[in-house]
View (cartoon, rainbow, N blue to C red):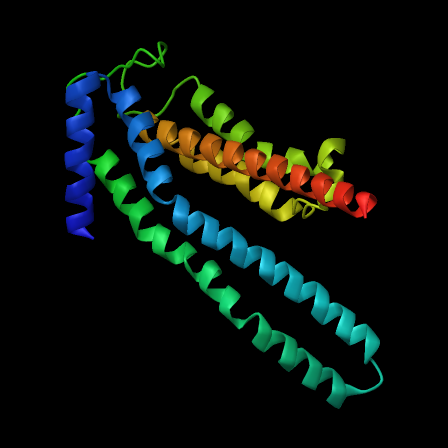
Length: 222
């Protein structure tokens, strides 16, 4: 872990040397990490999609063989083995965790000499919390944005998973308790990370929507 922290710290210092602004440096390092993790993110999403398919098929089997428990267990076991490889994609989430923790520690350990940034003009000290609570408010909005897509008519055909109220409340609480007390430089990282994730998910949904439209068009042509 210390090796990763040192590696990320070196990258942070090199980026700062180029742009000479810690706010912009945090944005760049966050985007860089996210881009490097794209292959893992793709595998993770594919794994989650397969898990959702598995859940639907299991529910269908339970209804079909509700009066035959032995047959039900046999069919569930058969379908589970079919999707067993999909768990790899889900487990890749844990590969990202050490990287994110290391980046967090690298950012937190930055010995700031210049305590302001042009992108946050109201901030006078990046190592202190935002006394105006603008950063926590922005963070809450951005991390709640993915839930909005479920309610947009344009994405109804994708049958997106309905937002979990507990997760929504948790997001608000985490931002209220953590980001409001954390240094602004950490809050900025959190915001950029959340915004990137939202845009990535938005693009994915648009691509899936087009694929579905093309599939329907091909069926009509036949």
